[in-house]
Amino acid sequence: MLNREQVEQQQEQLREQIALLPQEQRKHFYQLWQKQVKDPDSYAVLNYLLLAGLHHFYLGKWLRGAVNLVISIIAILLVALGVGLLGLGLLVAITIVELPALFRSELVVLDYNNQQMQQLLEQVKSA
Image (tube, rainbow, N blue to C red; front, side):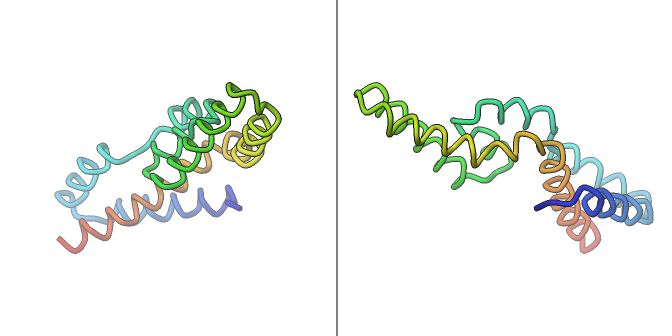
C-alpha cells in the first residue's frame, strides 16, 4: 500500500535533483515532462467509471485495464442474458477491488508521476 509521506518525500527529492541540473538539461527535462505527466483529476474521473477500467489505460497499465474491461463486458452480458446474480457478483467484485484506487487516486497518480520523473531524469542525465 502506498504511503503518502514517502511518495511526497520522493517527489521532493526528485525536484531537488532536477533543480541541480544545468539549465539546458533542466529545460529539456521539463519539455519532455510536460508530455508525460498525468493529472490526478483525469485519473479520478476515469476511475468513477469503475467497471470499464479506463483509469488503468490512462496510466499505461494495459493488461489490468483489459482485464477490467473484459470482466465488465462479461458481467453486463450475464445480466442481459438472465444470469443476473453471477453478473452482479462480478460487478461487485470489480467494485471492491477498484474502490481503494478511487479513494487514493491522487496518491496513485503522484506515485506514477514520480516513477516517470525518475526515469526521465536518468534519461536526461545520460544524454
